[in-house]
Amino acid sequence: MNARTSTGMADDKHSVAAVYEDEKVADAYLAKRMQFTWQRLLHRKQVACLNRAIAARRPSSVLELAPGPARLSTEVSGFGRGVMVENSEEMIRIARQRLKQKGLDATWSVIGGSAFELEALLPEQTFDLAYTFRFIRHFREPERAQLYRGIRDRLNNDGVLVFDVVNKKVRDALDARMTETPKGELSVYDATYTPESFRAEIGQYGFDVVGLQ
Image (spheres, helix red, strand yellow):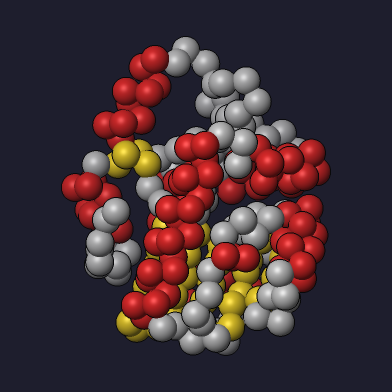
């Protein structure tokens, strides 16, 4: 499958999925995401953010979308049961290995399938908290809308969604200094936001913004 669209980067459910289904990408993902100090700092900040949210909400059930190799979930705790939905078979293989190594294979169920098809994958299940990182932002607005609606339907009435968005001001400044994608970086689309534009977008799909960090 071609992992690029006419825009020159992966930016829809098929092209983004194809990037992460690549065996070489899956096997090298964790090492690549942890090679620089700022990446390790970002990882620790994300783990801390999730653990604070879980400690505050004390969810009995947690859903993670597109966990990749379980980069985050081996370091979060304080909930009853967890379900991961991952499309890439290669990522599933690595995630299950890592969860078993950490003694978490009884806590987490890893389901193969698309996050765009949650109703079919999890027809009888709802969750107190859902999270995903480096995922929703990779899609353009129509597909983001589909994800928001699907996640909202799988959350309990007081459920919480935690995810990352890209700061438009910072990203624009970085992009202005770069004429091409750095060597080795995956060419995947990122939506960018101001706080105002993010609140406007997420509010359309039944979410209230609890906080921005």
